[in-house]
Length: 167
Image (cartoon, rainbow, N blue to C red; front, side):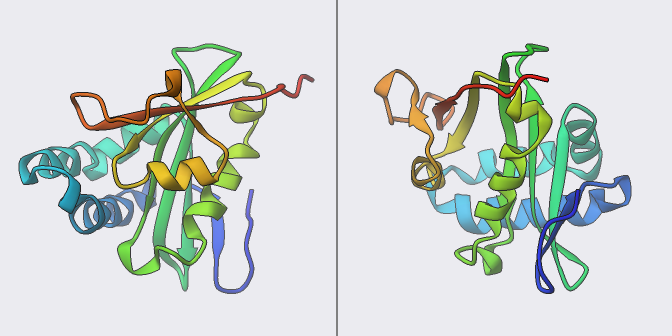
C-alpha cells in the first residue's frame, strides 16, 4: 500500500528500513519526548527501538514508514491486541522532530486506520506519551475510563471504539 504525493510517501516497512527507522525514533524520543521524561527512560526506549527492536516490532504488526525524498521521516504500526480479532493496538507512531506539525503523523495514523487489522476491530487501544496524547485526542481517541493522566510508566491510555468492517 502506497499513499502520498510527490513529497510524502507512506509504504509498508521493509527490513532494510530498520536502521534508519531506529535512528529516526531515537531522535524523536530524545528531542520531542525528552522534556517530559527522565533521560534514562528515554535512553531505555531508544535501545528498545534499536534496529533489532524495530525488526521485532515490525514482525509483530503491520508497520508503515513515511518517506520524504527517500528518507524515513516517520513510522507507525498496528497489531492485534493479544491475538484478538475484535481488538487492535496502535503499537508505534513516531515522526522525525523536524517534520512534526506538517501532517506526517496524521497521514501515518490514517494509514494505520485503513489497515485490515484496524478495520476488523471494535476497539483500538494505544498507550500515548505525555507529549502526544493531545494529538490522539484530536484524531478521535478517548481517554480510557475517562482518565487523561499518565500511569506510573508515563503512558496515557486511550482508545477508539468503532463498528468493524467484516468480510
